[in-house]
Image (tube, rainbow, N blue to C red; front, side):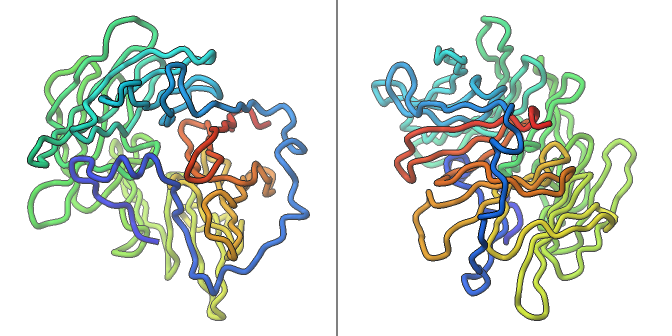
Length: 366
């Protein structure tokens, strides 16, 4: 596994939003088949879970790529206009009705990402490239409860860092926060913020390579590959060091996910607290983490299990490990892309030609 990449001026973001995220993968020799015959299904464990199936096409025809679900049927996403000249950012209601929030010319390689939501306030980053390939990134926001158009917050984004995490940008106390690479030869990270009403950007520089995490935490970028795993509390100015040893570790403020390689060459995935306590094995070498964020809602680890003999993208089993129950549950089979934001999990079916999206509200799992 490699650490999160710096996406300077959001280069590569479009691919991150439309491709599956596989964060912990093992060499083929280690991928031993794992039988799921004894694994309980979603319907058996949580029969009252809220879930939905979403058509891939929007009401005026083009294919839809969801980027954020507010509930299992209400979402934000992108779709070209019917003429194929622009990429639209739209809010899609439960009945399929669309509200266009922004549109950018397809000729300028538009990208939308880094979505943050607080109540009805939604903020995001968008980038375009000119004819010479020079990029421009701006931050925008909209109030979904009003009919007022989207508003630009700032063009002063710095060297914006996006990792395909739900914490790439966060909203706290009516301010939008994001991380940017600091200029200079020394490794440092800028924590930038702007009011949701717009205005000047505040910049705070922290030594080291960091990514945004659940506010007000930062987490070290690199997962133990290029240095120790650390968590940093921005308000209390304290650091938590995680003893990763030789494991590849990714952390939230409450849980860490570790890829463990044993002396015998076998592999497994563990969860543990940042102080090393409450450690338990949650999967063997045939599994991989499906999303970058660790222990969604401080409870669910999202895993994928693939048939090692097949290479097509829609043969994955989608699994949830429930920290509270200490149980692995089969959510779906034949899965392609997997994403999760704010407690709503969604995935595609149909392989490279996506035929539908499917959602599950993890907040309804009791």
